Image (cartoon, rainbow, N blue to C red; front, side, top):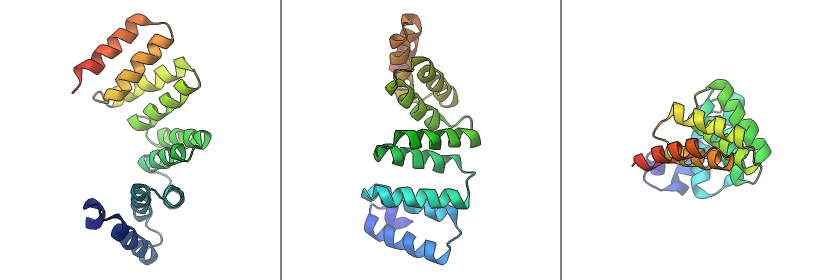
Length: 159
C-alpha cells in the first residue's frame, strides 16, 4: 500500500487492518500487515499476522522467514529455527533462511552446521556479503584458515 511505502505506518496499519477484515482469507494481506506492524515495532502483532498468513497459506517460504526473524526479535530462537527450517522445506534455496540458521548454529558454536548454512546461502545468493563474512569467521573458528581467507576475500570483493 502507498501509505506503507511512504513511511506512513499508522495509516498503513489502519488500511491493512481494514483490508483483512474485508478479505479474511487473503494470506498475502496478513503478511503485509505483519510487515507494517514490524515497521512500527509492534512485534507481537507482527508475529500474529505472519502466523495467520501461514495458517491460510503455509507454502510461502518468505513468510516463514519473516516469522523467524520476528521470533528472533522476540528472543525466541528455538521457534525461529523451526520457522527457518519450514522455509527451507518449501524453498531449499532460500538464502535468508540459510543465513539465519547459520547465525543460530554459530551462536551454539556448531561451526560445521554454520558453515553448511552459510555456504548454501552464498550459493543461492552470491552477492550476500554478510554471509561471506560469517562464512569466513566460521571457517576460522573451525580451524580452516585457508577456507576462511578465501571466504573473506569474496566478502572484500563485494560492494
